[in-house]
Length: 383
Image (cartoon, rainbow, N blue to C red; front, side):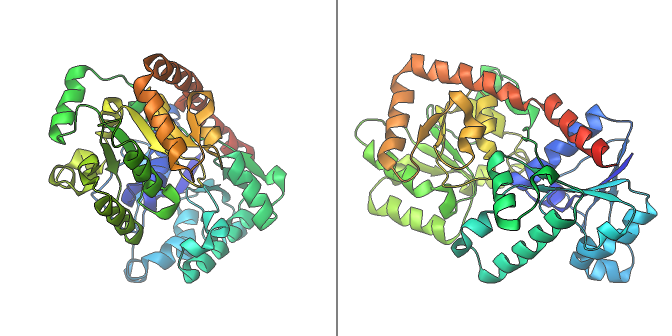
Protein backbone atom coordinates (compact mmCIF):
# COMPACT_ATOMS: atom_id res chain seq x y z
CA UNK A 1 0.00 0.00 0.00
CA UNK A 2 0.91 3.64 -0.45
CA UNK A 3 0.08 5.28 2.87
CA UNK A 4 0.09 9.05 3.32
CA UNK A 5 0.31 11.06 6.53
CA UNK A 6 -0.18 14.61 7.67
CA UNK A 7 3.37 14.93 8.97
CA UNK A 8 3.47 18.55 10.09
CA UNK A 9 3.75 17.66 13.76
CA UNK A 10 6.08 14.73 13.13
CA UNK A 11 8.65 17.18 11.78
CA UNK A 12 7.96 20.26 13.87
CA UNK A 13 6.36 19.37 17.22
CA UNK A 14 8.42 18.37 20.25
CA UNK A 15 5.49 17.60 22.56
CA UNK A 16 2.83 14.87 22.67
CA UNK A 17 1.39 15.14 19.15
CA UNK A 18 4.86 15.10 17.63
CA UNK A 19 5.93 12.14 19.73
CA UNK A 20 2.79 10.24 18.76
CA UNK A 21 3.48 10.86 15.07
CA UNK A 22 7.16 9.97 15.15
CA UNK A 23 6.63 6.84 17.23
CA UNK A 24 3.94 5.52 14.89
CA UNK A 25 5.83 6.35 11.69
CA UNK A 26 9.01 4.73 12.97
CA UNK A 27 7.17 1.58 14.03
CA UNK A 28 5.36 1.31 10.70
CA UNK A 29 8.50 1.61 8.57
CA UNK A 30 10.37 -0.86 10.78
CA UNK A 31 7.62 -3.49 11.08
CA UNK A 32 6.00 -3.14 7.66
CA UNK A 33 8.76 -2.16 5.22
CA UNK A 34 6.78 -3.65 2.31
CA UNK A 35 4.55 -0.55 2.25
CA UNK A 36 5.49 2.95 1.11
CA UNK A 37 5.04 5.86 3.51
CA UNK A 38 4.52 9.38 2.21
CA UNK A 39 4.98 12.12 4.79
CA UNK A 40 3.29 15.34 3.71
CA UNK A 41 5.21 18.15 5.38
CA UNK A 42 4.25 21.79 4.70
CA UNK A 43 7.72 23.10 5.50
CA UNK A 44 11.21 21.59 5.64
CA UNK A 45 12.64 21.16 9.13
CA UNK A 46 15.94 20.19 10.69
CA UNK A 47 14.37 19.66 14.11
CA UNK A 48 13.29 16.04 13.60
CA UNK A 49 14.07 13.50 10.90
CA UNK A 50 12.36 10.28 9.85
CA UNK A 51 14.35 8.22 7.41
CA UNK A 52 14.15 4.87 5.68
CA UNK A 53 14.03 3.37 2.21
CA UNK A 54 10.22 3.21 2.37
CA UNK A 55 9.82 6.77 3.70
CA UNK A 56 9.25 9.71 1.37
CA UNK A 57 8.98 13.30 2.57
CA UNK A 58 6.64 15.32 0.37
CA UNK A 59 6.95 19.12 0.44
CA UNK A 60 4.75 21.65 -1.38
CA UNK A 61 6.02 22.48 -4.86
CA UNK A 62 5.14 25.40 -7.06
CA UNK A 63 4.86 29.07 -6.12
CA UNK A 64 1.27 29.03 -4.82
CA UNK A 65 1.69 25.90 -2.71
CA UNK A 66 4.89 27.23 -1.16
CA UNK A 67 3.37 30.68 -0.59
CA UNK A 68 0.24 29.27 1.05
CA UNK A 69 1.51 26.23 2.91
CA UNK A 70 -1.46 26.10 5.27
CA UNK A 71 -3.88 25.92 2.34
CA UNK A 72 -1.74 23.21 0.75
CA UNK A 73 -1.85 21.14 3.94
CA UNK A 74 -5.57 21.58 4.56
CA UNK A 75 -6.87 21.15 1.00
CA UNK A 76 -4.57 21.49 -2.01
CA UNK A 77 -2.50 18.51 -0.89
CA UNK A 78 -5.21 16.33 -2.46
CA UNK A 79 -3.57 16.82 -5.87
CA UNK A 80 -0.32 15.34 -4.56
CA UNK A 81 -2.23 12.57 -2.81
CA UNK A 82 -3.87 11.58 -6.09
CA UNK A 83 -0.66 12.01 -8.10
CA UNK A 84 1.18 9.62 -5.78
CA UNK A 85 -1.71 7.12 -5.83
CA UNK A 86 -2.09 7.14 -2.05
CA UNK A 87 -4.35 4.30 -0.91
CA UNK A 88 -4.89 5.53 2.66
CA UNK A 89 -4.31 8.97 4.16
CA UNK A 90 -3.91 9.17 7.95
CA UNK A 91 -4.50 12.49 9.68
CA UNK A 92 -2.30 11.95 12.70
CA UNK A 93 -3.67 14.85 14.71
CA UNK A 94 -7.36 15.65 14.31
CA UNK A 95 -7.43 16.76 10.68
CA UNK A 96 -7.90 15.45 7.14
CA UNK A 97 -7.78 17.48 3.91
CA UNK A 98 -11.03 19.14 2.92
CA UNK A 99 -12.76 17.11 0.22
CA UNK A 100 -10.63 13.99 0.51
CA UNK A 101 -13.84 11.96 0.76
CA UNK A 102 -14.50 12.90 -2.90
CA UNK A 103 -11.28 11.23 -4.04
CA UNK A 104 -10.47 7.54 -4.35
CA UNK A 105 -8.16 7.72 -1.30
CA UNK A 106 -9.54 6.32 1.92
CA UNK A 107 -8.89 8.24 5.12
CA UNK A 108 -8.28 7.65 8.80
CA UNK A 109 -8.01 10.31 11.50
CA UNK A 110 -6.62 10.10 15.03
CA UNK A 111 -8.46 12.15 17.63
CA UNK A 112 -6.35 12.64 20.73
CA UNK A 113 -8.78 14.63 22.82
CA UNK A 114 -11.63 17.13 22.70
CA UNK A 115 -10.33 19.31 25.50
CA UNK A 116 -11.29 22.49 23.64
CA UNK A 117 -14.91 21.31 23.82
CA UNK A 118 -14.77 20.47 27.52
CA UNK A 119 -12.74 23.49 28.61
CA UNK A 120 -13.29 26.21 25.99
CA UNK A 121 -12.43 28.91 28.52
CA UNK A 122 -8.81 27.74 28.41
CA UNK A 123 -8.52 28.61 24.71
CA UNK A 124 -8.85 31.65 22.50
CA UNK A 125 -12.53 31.70 21.36
CA UNK A 126 -11.49 31.87 17.72
CA UNK A 127 -9.28 28.81 18.17
CA UNK A 128 -12.16 26.90 19.74
CA UNK A 129 -14.32 27.58 16.67
CA UNK A 130 -11.52 26.54 14.29
CA UNK A 131 -10.73 23.35 16.23
CA UNK A 132 -14.38 22.39 16.51
CA UNK A 133 -14.94 22.83 12.79
CA UNK A 134 -11.82 20.87 11.80
CA UNK A 135 -12.30 18.06 14.31
CA UNK A 136 -15.98 17.61 13.54
CA UNK A 137 -15.29 17.59 9.79
CA UNK A 138 -12.56 14.98 10.20
CA UNK A 139 -14.72 12.73 12.38
CA UNK A 140 -17.66 13.04 10.00
CA UNK A 141 -15.83 12.45 6.71
CA UNK A 142 -12.99 10.05 7.59
CA UNK A 143 -13.63 6.39 6.85
CA UNK A 144 -12.39 5.47 10.33
CA UNK A 145 -11.80 7.45 13.51
CA UNK A 146 -9.06 6.33 15.89
CA UNK A 147 -9.58 7.43 19.51
CA UNK A 148 -6.53 7.11 21.72
CA UNK A 149 -8.61 6.23 24.81
CA UNK A 150 -12.10 5.21 25.84
CA UNK A 151 -12.47 8.69 27.31
CA UNK A 152 -11.80 10.26 23.92
CA UNK A 153 -14.18 7.84 22.22
CA UNK A 154 -16.97 8.82 24.60
CA UNK A 155 -16.28 12.49 23.95
CA UNK A 156 -16.40 12.03 20.16
CA UNK A 157 -19.80 10.36 20.49
CA UNK A 158 -21.11 12.92 22.98
CA UNK A 159 -19.90 16.12 21.31
CA UNK A 160 -20.02 15.21 17.61
CA UNK A 161 -22.67 12.44 17.56
CA UNK A 162 -20.40 10.14 15.54
CA UNK A 163 -21.67 6.53 15.35
CA UNK A 164 -19.84 4.29 17.80
CA UNK A 165 -19.14 1.66 15.10
CA UNK A 166 -17.04 4.20 13.18
CA UNK A 167 -14.68 4.77 16.13
CA UNK A 168 -11.95 2.39 17.22
CA UNK A 169 -9.95 2.81 20.40
CA UNK A 170 -6.29 2.21 19.73
CA UNK A 171 -4.03 2.87 22.69
CA UNK A 172 -0.78 4.46 21.65
CA UNK A 173 2.67 3.21 22.49
CA UNK A 174 5.73 5.27 23.30
CA UNK A 175 9.31 5.39 22.16
CA UNK A 176 10.84 1.93 22.84
CA UNK A 177 13.89 3.70 24.29
CA UNK A 178 11.94 4.23 27.53
CA UNK A 179 11.73 0.46 28.04
CA UNK A 180 15.49 -0.05 27.80
CA UNK A 181 17.19 -0.12 31.24
CA UNK A 182 20.25 2.11 31.19
CA UNK A 183 23.51 1.45 33.02
CA UNK A 184 24.57 3.63 35.95
CA UNK A 185 27.28 5.05 33.70
CA UNK A 186 24.78 6.04 30.99
CA UNK A 187 22.50 7.67 33.52
CA UNK A 188 25.37 9.48 35.18
CA UNK A 189 26.42 11.05 31.88
CA UNK A 190 22.97 12.59 31.48
CA UNK A 191 22.80 13.52 35.16
CA UNK A 192 26.04 15.47 34.86
CA UNK A 193 25.06 17.00 31.51
CA UNK A 194 22.07 18.73 33.12
CA UNK A 195 23.46 19.02 36.65
CA UNK A 196 20.58 16.98 38.02
CA UNK A 197 20.40 16.43 41.80
CA UNK A 198 21.00 12.98 43.24
CA UNK A 199 17.28 12.60 44.00
CA UNK A 200 14.36 14.44 42.43
CA UNK A 201 10.71 14.20 41.54
CA UNK A 202 9.89 14.75 37.88
CA UNK A 203 7.12 16.57 36.04
CA UNK A 204 6.95 16.54 32.23
CA UNK A 205 4.50 18.46 30.08
CA UNK A 206 3.53 21.87 28.75
CA UNK A 207 3.06 24.27 31.67
CA UNK A 208 -0.61 25.10 31.27
CA UNK A 209 -3.46 25.17 33.78
CA UNK A 210 -4.80 21.76 32.81
CA UNK A 211 -1.48 20.07 33.60
CA UNK A 212 -1.74 21.27 37.21
CA UNK A 213 1.85 22.19 38.07
CA UNK A 214 0.60 24.66 40.68
CA UNK A 215 -0.86 21.92 42.88
CA UNK A 216 2.38 19.94 42.56
CA UNK A 217 4.25 22.99 43.86
CA UNK A 218 1.72 23.29 46.68
CA UNK A 219 2.47 19.65 47.56
CA UNK A 220 6.20 20.46 47.57
CA UNK A 221 5.44 23.31 49.98
CA UNK A 222 3.42 21.01 52.26
CA UNK A 223 6.39 18.63 52.40
CA UNK A 224 9.01 21.37 52.85
CA UNK A 225 9.95 20.23 56.35
CA UNK A 226 9.71 16.48 55.63
CA UNK A 227 11.32 15.81 52.25
CA UNK A 228 14.32 17.70 50.99
CA UNK A 229 13.87 16.53 47.41
CA UNK A 230 13.48 19.02 44.56
CA UNK A 231 11.09 18.87 41.62
CA UNK A 232 12.54 18.90 38.10
CA UNK A 233 10.14 20.36 35.54
CA UNK A 234 10.50 19.68 31.80
CA UNK A 235 8.25 21.88 29.71
CA UNK A 236 7.47 25.51 29.00
CA UNK A 237 4.51 27.84 29.18
CA UNK A 238 3.23 31.40 29.35
CA UNK A 239 0.82 33.12 31.75
CA UNK A 240 0.13 30.02 33.82
CA UNK A 241 3.86 29.35 34.17
CA UNK A 242 4.29 32.87 35.55
CA UNK A 243 1.44 32.23 38.00
CA UNK A 244 3.28 29.13 39.22
CA UNK A 245 6.54 31.05 39.53
CA UNK A 246 4.79 33.74 41.56
CA UNK A 247 3.56 31.07 43.98
CA UNK A 248 7.05 29.57 44.22
CA UNK A 249 8.60 32.96 44.98
CA UNK A 250 5.94 34.01 47.48
CA UNK A 251 6.34 30.76 49.43
CA UNK A 252 10.11 30.61 49.41
CA UNK A 253 10.50 27.26 47.63
CA UNK A 254 12.51 28.44 44.64
CA UNK A 255 15.40 26.18 45.66
CA UNK A 256 13.09 23.16 45.42
CA UNK A 257 11.83 23.72 41.84
CA UNK A 258 14.17 23.30 38.85
CA UNK A 259 12.81 24.46 35.49
CA UNK A 260 15.16 22.30 33.47
CA UNK A 261 13.97 23.53 30.08
CA UNK A 262 15.24 27.00 30.99
CA UNK A 263 18.79 25.81 31.68
CA UNK A 264 21.58 26.60 29.25
CA UNK A 265 22.42 22.89 29.09
CA UNK A 266 18.91 22.05 27.90
CA UNK A 267 18.64 24.98 25.49
CA UNK A 268 21.93 24.06 23.82
CA UNK A 269 21.44 20.29 23.76
CA UNK A 270 20.17 18.63 20.59
CA UNK A 271 19.51 15.45 22.57
CA UNK A 272 17.26 17.38 24.95
CA UNK A 273 15.35 19.05 22.12
CA UNK A 274 14.83 15.69 20.42
CA UNK A 275 13.87 14.06 23.77
CA UNK A 276 16.53 11.37 23.35
CA UNK A 277 17.91 12.13 26.83
CA UNK A 278 14.49 11.78 28.45
CA UNK A 279 14.67 8.00 29.12
CA UNK A 280 17.80 8.55 31.21
CA UNK A 281 16.22 11.49 33.06
CA UNK A 282 13.15 9.36 33.84
CA UNK A 283 15.31 6.52 35.13
CA UNK A 284 17.19 8.91 37.43
CA UNK A 285 14.01 10.23 39.07
CA UNK A 286 12.24 9.13 42.26
CA UNK A 287 8.76 9.40 40.72
CA UNK A 288 6.82 11.10 37.95
CA UNK A 289 4.10 13.50 39.12
CA UNK A 290 1.36 14.00 36.53
CA UNK A 291 -1.90 15.06 38.22
CA UNK A 292 -3.55 16.53 35.13
CA UNK A 293 -7.17 17.61 35.31
CA UNK A 294 -7.93 16.12 31.91
CA UNK A 295 -6.05 14.28 29.15
CA UNK A 296 -6.71 12.43 25.94
CA UNK A 297 -4.23 9.81 27.14
CA UNK A 298 -1.23 11.17 29.07
CA UNK A 299 1.89 9.83 27.37
CA UNK A 300 4.30 10.71 30.24
CA UNK A 301 2.37 8.23 32.37
CA UNK A 302 3.07 5.40 29.92
CA UNK A 303 6.67 6.54 29.46
CA UNK A 304 7.08 6.31 33.24
CA UNK A 305 5.60 2.81 33.45
CA UNK A 306 7.95 1.66 30.68
CA UNK A 307 10.86 3.27 32.55
CA UNK A 308 9.91 1.43 35.76
CA UNK A 309 9.38 4.83 37.34
CA UNK A 310 6.62 5.16 39.95
CA UNK A 311 3.98 7.62 38.78
CA UNK A 312 1.48 9.75 40.68
CA UNK A 313 -1.42 10.75 38.47
CA UNK A 314 -5.07 11.78 38.61
CA UNK A 315 -8.02 9.58 39.44
CA UNK A 316 -10.10 11.27 36.71
CA UNK A 317 -10.38 11.42 32.91
CA UNK A 318 -8.50 8.72 30.99
CA UNK A 319 -5.54 8.65 33.37
CA UNK A 320 -6.60 5.41 35.12
CA UNK A 321 -6.64 3.87 31.60
CA UNK A 322 -3.06 4.99 31.06
CA UNK A 323 -1.75 4.17 34.53
CA UNK A 324 -3.45 0.87 35.31
CA UNK A 325 -2.90 -0.88 38.65
CA UNK A 326 0.68 0.31 39.04
CA UNK A 327 0.03 4.04 39.43
CA UNK A 328 -0.73 6.05 42.56
CA UNK A 329 -3.98 7.97 42.08
CA UNK A 330 -4.81 11.31 43.67
CA UNK A 331 -7.53 13.91 43.41
CA UNK A 332 -5.90 16.53 41.12
CA UNK A 333 -7.57 19.31 43.15
CA UNK A 334 -5.92 18.10 46.36
CA UNK A 335 -2.31 19.10 47.00
CA UNK A 336 -2.58 17.07 50.20
CA UNK A 337 -3.28 13.84 48.30
CA UNK A 338 -0.45 14.53 45.85
CA UNK A 339 1.90 15.19 48.77
CA UNK A 340 0.82 11.96 50.47
CA UNK A 341 1.73 10.00 47.35
CA UNK A 342 5.14 11.66 47.09
CA UNK A 343 5.89 10.95 50.74
CA UNK A 344 4.81 7.32 50.59
CA UNK A 345 6.71 6.50 47.38
CA UNK A 346 9.88 8.03 48.80
CA UNK A 347 9.67 6.54 52.27
CA UNK A 348 8.20 3.09 51.51
CA UNK A 349 10.71 1.22 49.35
CA UNK A 350 8.63 -1.96 49.13
CA UNK A 351 5.59 0.03 48.01
CA UNK A 352 7.61 1.83 45.33
CA UNK A 353 9.11 -1.43 44.10
CA UNK A 354 5.64 -2.97 43.84
CA UNK A 355 4.51 0.04 41.79
CA UNK A 356 7.45 -0.40 39.44
CA UNK A 357 6.66 -4.07 38.83
CA UNK A 358 2.92 -3.60 38.38
CA UNK A 359 3.49 -0.60 36.17
CA UNK A 360 5.96 -2.45 33.98
CA UNK A 361 3.63 -5.40 33.58
CA UNK A 362 0.74 -3.11 32.67
CA UNK A 363 2.91 -1.25 30.13
CA UNK A 364 3.18 -4.47 28.10
CA UNK A 365 -0.45 -3.86 27.12
CA UNK A 366 0.88 -0.95 25.07
CA UNK A 367 3.83 -2.83 23.54
CA UNK A 368 4.99 -1.34 20.22
CA UNK A 369 4.34 -4.61 18.35
CA UNK A 370 0.72 -4.76 19.52
CA UNK A 371 0.16 -1.11 18.75
CA UNK A 372 1.58 -1.06 15.23
CA UNK A 373 -0.24 -4.29 14.34
CA UNK A 374 -3.51 -2.76 15.50
CA UNK A 375 -2.93 0.33 13.35
CA UNK A 376 -2.05 -1.73 10.28
CA UNK A 377 -5.20 -3.83 10.75
CA UNK A 378 -7.23 -0.61 10.79
CA UNK A 379 -5.65 0.46 7.52
CA UNK A 380 -6.45 -2.89 5.93
CA UNK A 381 -10.04 -2.73 7.17
CA UNK A 382 -10.75 0.51 5.30
CA UNK A 383 -8.71 -0.09 2.17
